[in-house]
Length: 50
Image (cartoon, rainbow, N blue to C red):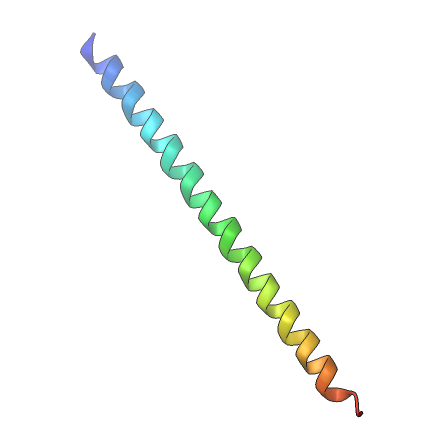
């Protein structure tokens, strides 16, 4: 049946899109954590008097 091929293509596209979105989410979370860490370090540094 031809619908099997269409189903396989749709499944592959779905897996590809899910993987891509998961990668983007992980990348954004890493950036947010890095920014948060850097801000914490900057605040920590400002509290110390030279």
